[in-house]
Amino acid sequence: MTTSKVGLREFLHDNLLIGDGAMATQLHRLGMPVGVSFEELCLSNPQLVHDVHASYYQAGARFLETNTFSANRDALARYGLEHKVARINRLAVAIAREAAQEDAYVAGSIGSILAGRVRKKVLDEYRDQYEEQAIALLHAGVDGLILETFVDLEELLLALEVIRPLTEAPLIAQLATLEVGRTRDGYSLTEAFAHLKAAGADVVGLNCRLGPAEILRSFEQVQIPINTILSAFPNAGRLGMTDGEYAFKSTPDYFAESALRLREQGVRLLGGCCGTTPEHVQAMATALQSLEPLERVNPPIVTGDTPSITVQSARLHDKPSIVERVKTGTTIIVEFDPPRDLDAEQFLHGCCELHKAGADAITLADNSLATVRMSNMALGALMKNRHGIDPLLHLACRDRNLIGQQSHLMGLHALGIDQILVITGDPARFGDLPGSSSVFDVTSFDLIRMVKQLNEGISFSGRPLKQKAQFIVGAAFNPNVRKIDAAIARLEKKVEAGADYIMTQPVYDAESIKLVYESTKHIGIPVFIGIMPLTSSRNAEFLHNEVPGIKLSDEALARMKSVQGAEARKEGIAIAKELLDTAIRYFNGIYLITPFNYHEMAAELIQYVRQQSALVKAVAQP
Image (tube, rainbow, N blue to C red):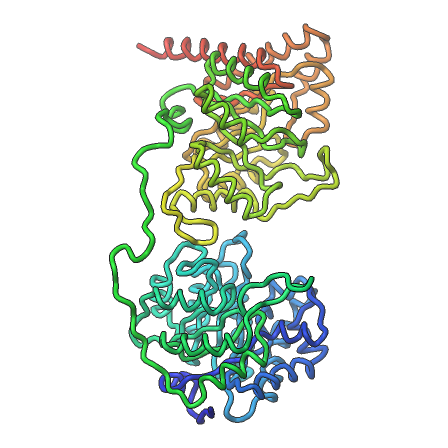
């Protein structure tokens, strides 16, 4: 198959075009270790990069991508190369151009900056990086740009928005879906391709993540905009362990058969992604040799063709949530830590006592201070099903990767537990199993957003879930800091991410309570002010000097130092009641933390809050 001198866009209107395969796979086969910057090889070993391009050209590829997939400032900064963005991109074009013959096109490769990671920045911050890389590639003389492996449509649209005004050269926009038919940020491929076409993409398609069969299924189900050119660069199947080594399974013969099927879907630009080699490309080129492209025929539009999301009309339980309750009156959340042993009965007894005293919800930490405790999910289910007590579970970012987090949340949904508090979690190395790992796949901001995505009936990967979750999501706030403005700015980001309510770390003086009120009254969601009774002078000193996020007043420290034994607990209760007198005046939401599982202390404070709230309400009535 040969190309003429027409432009890439014009050629694709009337012809099939074979693209290359994976650059990284070939470089690895040639001895380059995983973990290095393959793009840097354009500087240090250009001949090796040239040889990879040449091997794909010799195999039949007439569309070569530059070795610039991760040649953006963000990715290169990991190797101290952020100041060489323009140089690497220009050299990459020259190397590809030298390896290609007159009948081959060279496209500048631009990969996703997120690169599959969970979004931690505002996407708008990537504008300059896309512009910088695109300008370098365009000035070096590429025939077009291929924007590839974007798992989120919104990032790809941002890249198009930045790059389209820079050039009239063809732009190829390729998504990498984690599930057949839907992007990670929840768009169907029908919606996504329509948006990409409207944003100025000349070619739309799919690459990476999925193998030929799943990419084929994706095209079979999607409505493609009229007069839209399609591309497909599938992986060589799924990555798995074979003979003790990780390898992709799809053979060149299978790729050849798949190329014929993709042609039937109207795909005109065909290549390979992870795991593909010159052998895969040669098999495709041979299979498609002398064949003309086929016009795309969209599948019939059938109502219900896309999996529907069932909207639940009722809450998972018949009681109002704490957010609904706190809007109408004093609402009390009590924290009661799960046991560190295998005996759950004493814990459940304490929960019942707190419930009888008037707690609206009992919140269970998620291995607080990185210390192993019984699963709060299991205990929450026992509380709810045996005793009818509303659990509110902490959900730490520390212990579960994204797979575990979504699985855990789906389990909570199945159990009817829908009130949660998202927290970062203390580092594992400071807990009772210091050799364990902290996961931290996501920040608390990310996890709040992702829980809210489940509430839309969309999984973390973008797959429809048939039902919408109904999680009420809380966020933590630490007011015991030197710079309250910075803490408030962080809190506002959590609210922006979707938090429904706030729970604060415990405070130990009236002025701090007032400061929290003044600082948070603008945020528009309920705040539960934290109060934790002290039990002894040592307890006070430990909290003040060793526990992150807690700061005691000089007065509280002095008062606790003056008493011992049973009198110390009485003094701790007295201090807490004084603080509650102030808290009730400013907040409907009260968050009581039970020290050392002394549920009797928390129960006494619950009753005190109820009595004082009733008095305040009575005085306020005319």
